[in-house]
Image (cartoon, rainbow, N blue to C red; front, side):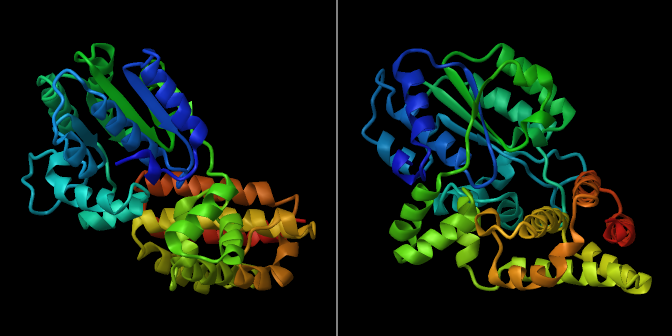
Length: 374
């Protein structure tokens, strides 16, 4: 993979290259930023750059191996799930899903956790990085570099490590194998152990700028200038969101219907209907439940901003705006923050495997009171 597959982020690219070329490369980096900003794309492109720069034992096959992401000194670590076919004592590791990972990343280095869950076939599970993974990583990195240069370990979403894995990784980072570079790709770095965060060099990746998104939509997706400009603005620096805008039958339509139903039934105090709504929400997979709550947070914010009647502050679709015309007045200074806090608590509870029926029924009942606040 080359830098050409990274959308925008030229400043981060230059910073990484200066580290490598200037002899100031730390043994552990952590790229942090929002979803769809290209953190993984940057990590993979930089890892390939480091491996392509190995000159001790140059190989004519190096570029071909890197293009296929099958270089023996390039190691990927990512969250996994436990399949029913696995033994009771088996701790899932990345190698168990190497074929699925390779197929997904070869389509492009921009994908979400939901895409990865679907690839593994476990939409209703919680993916984590197990202690077994850290043992496998220690073994792999203890081996001598096949090319005589760097060994690169890319860890996607390290915040999903369990505590045993995190402690083992900490020791590995403190005493890294020779010429090993760790590149972590984190979306929620605050969930990592402080001791790990303090031992890596953090690089914050911002949202992709709109012009880079617009150009990519025209060049990679064949959009006209007007459509590319509109979608880039809606995507707000998120390439995954830009692609979602292009896809028909987006789950956003389903989420909008669920949002409308929740608000209408809460306003009318139809408790039985709210119970049915919560039962419906409980049938969705946990990752999808979390995406709905993130959508809820976004739509609450957009409806609040709609009240200011400033077009440049709003990022809604036509369908969302049609609903906002009559609904936005119910989101005000008195309830916008409590609604956001409620959704964030629900996100936390769902992430901790709480009973979804209880979480969403409580969520719906509290919405009755919040809509009354003025």
